[in-house]
Amino acid sequence: MEIITTISLWFIPVLIGSILLYGTFKQVPTYESFVEGGKEGIKIAVSIIPFLVGMLVAISVFRASGALEYMIDLIRPALEAIGFPAEIAPLAIIRPISGTAALGMTSDLIATYGPDSFIGRLASTLQGSTDTTFYVLTVYFGAVGIKKMGDALKVGLLADLVGIIATVVIVTLVFG
Image (cartoon, rainbow, N blue to C red):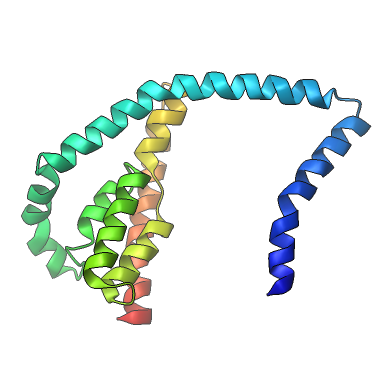
């Protein structure tokens, strides 16, 4: 365990140092490249802000309006018929949209049901098994000007669906 701690502490500094040494060896102006990358990073961060604000407002309206709860109530019988806990459905719906909102829902579920409960374990596993597909597409693709994102959306949502199904199956088998 002590070796893992030592490796984790030194990995990033050694990696950065190695990159700088390699760049210097290849006669790349490393400092100038670093400064140029920093300038570009700031430009990208500023260009992301409108997309980020739009996404956060849309998520807040969706949750605050009660639309999420209404939608879950509509599909509750179908969820129960296939063995999918309805308590997890809001998390499964929000997770592809916003990681922060999903983390808040996961925290609420763990506070309500407990970290060692089936729902707590399911929520925790779901949080780590899916990605924020819409967030990535909206913020990052929008920031770099990618307009055609249909295939990326399909693949991302399919990966999220597989992650959700695998989460329910595996957590049920292991902890059910």
